Length: 278
Image (cartoon, rainbow, N blue to C red):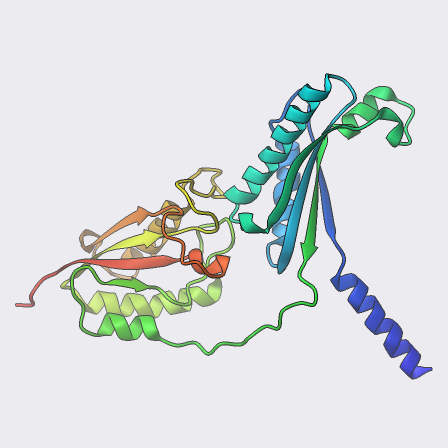
């Protein structure tokens, strides 16, 4: 009996691991702009999946039965593209979006409902299907190496760029995790002592190439790379680093590292001037 229970538990776990996550976004008649309430629901869904190892995301747009075929295909594609833009602006990797397609109209008899207006309202939508990686990738525990601190303590020259290792930002936000603040405290102590070093704090976002920046979920502004750089700037000022030694800049998505998306969610220090100590 016991082996059977174990087998059933394993089957349940496997089926759960492969389970797709689905979400639907509804639109007003003839519109592809996302209504405010639907946008809020979508952001909640993104928060739910942001820690999942995603294999692929498919996005399908639909319309109701009114309008010509060409009109409906265009409108449904615009709705799908609007959802893709929200994913991109919230730092989801566009390479995982395998399908972003407008499917046109859904016939009114597809849904079991008598109210025609309600049926059409339910057909004006985008379906999002998120498929997790299966089997899940093993989590590698990497030892924390204080490479950043060693570099900041060592010989520096103008033009040096130093990645602030182990500083982790929450997806779509400009603030650090609690553990990352401990790391930044140690960096601040070094920079307070090195009074002759002047530098620019450069903020980055993931996940696509090009000129677009990501949206800060807190402020709803398209300036997340700047917000992250300023967060570090303000933090260092608060810890005693003189403000006139620092500048901050948002690098948007101009310098992807080409690895995992979270590696592009980063801040770097660019040494701009080193004065000889008197």
